Every structure is written in structure tokens, then in C-alpha cells.
Length: 166
Image (tube, rainbow, N blue to C red):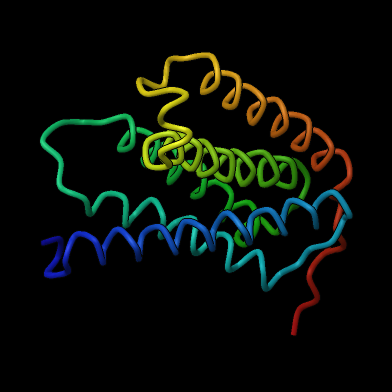
């Protein structure tokens, strides 16, 4: 039991939250490349990506794991992204800080998705049972390179007009 919830139910909730964060993050990334603010979906992305890390800490553990380290790094990146977006309103250098930190947090979620896929999907697990085999390493390398390229594009293209004050 985790927080009074069956482990399988908690895991399902965590996975759904993670997938919402990843899906909305991909839309936000596409919006950045198209120079669109996408305020509503951005709020969903940031909220669910924070929730992904927070719910990740709810699983039982006996020592510091790579997942915990990724969660801490992700929350630090998200703290910067949220500050850049909402407190500093993407002004000057904060625009680029937002793009880089938000997309790094998205990358970390996709990185974990790949790890979990190779752990849980039988066909992938058979290809890389220890996650040190070439198919796993190649997949993670491709994901990293794609994110670097997309982050460079987003950093170049995302120059939104300031949000209107109501």
C-alpha cells in the first residue's frame, strides 16, 4: 500500500499523470517551435510534469535510486521553468531559460518512459534485459539527439509576445 492506495492503482495514477505531462509537453514543444505561447496547455504540461516527479517519490524505496535523482533534477528544472514563465514573464534571458529548462524536464520524462518501456514491455525487455545492450543505448541516444535538436529550434523560434494583462 502506498498512501493507503494499492500499489497497482498508485502506479496506474502515476503513469497516467506522466503520460499527460509528456503528451502536453510535446504540444508545448511544437508550440515553441511555431512561436505560440499555448498558455493553457503549458499550465497543464508544467503541472502534470511536477506531479509526475512528486508522485514518483511516493513509491517505497530503501536507498537513493536513479529515479529519485531524476525526480530531484526534474523538480529543480521545473522550478526554474515556472519562475521564468510566470514570475519573470519570459523577459530577456528568462525566455531561453524557460525553453531549456522546460524541455530538459520533458526530456527527463521521456528518458524515464524509455527506461520503463524496456523494463515492462516484454519484446523490448528481451532486446535489452540489463538496459546496457545496444538497442537500449541507441534508443536513448536517439531520444537525446532529437531533444537537443528540438530544443535548439525552440530556443531560436520561441519569441512570444508578452501575455496581455487582464
